[in-house]
Amino acid sequence: MLVIRLSRVGKKKQPTYRVVVQEKQRDPWGTSVEIIGNYNPRTEPSTLNLKEDRVKHWLERGAQPSPTVHNLLVDIGLVKGPKVRATCHDKAEPTPVTDSPAPAPAVETEKVTPVEEAPAPAVETEKVTPVEEAPAPETPVEAEPVQETPIPETPAEESPTLTGEEKPAAE
Image (cartoon, rainbow, N blue to C red; front, side):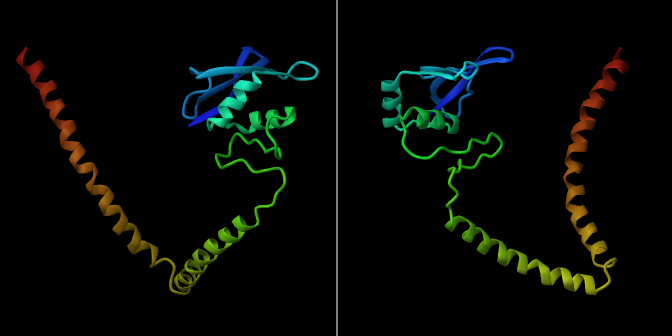
């Protein structure tokens, strides 16, 4: 899938950006399909130079603008609709500025409610019984499968050690 995004160029502490069309999985500084403009946020006011016909072309072909590019396109009037909040840490879809997703929270609360009800009674019954006795049997049962996995690795390590000892003995 193609995406229209900003690619940073310029010196240290003097950022300028290229507006590029790339594959979504590619590194922003990697090769691009096409450079369709540039953006300089340091000028007063910020400068945005775009090949508007090429932007429209790529949007018609299904290229998705990044949240920042989407907001820039809304500012100049190429895209209609509200601006989106650009977040760099959240990988979820960007949310519109106007918060109106009422169905999504209702679904989340329904999923969370059954999960909370099931563990709560189990925890209470464990607290009623002696707490020290319940965790002790569970821990050794879990530890036994973990001990079985390192055993096959140990013979493999011993084989190279024997060959290393034989060479000095032969000399």
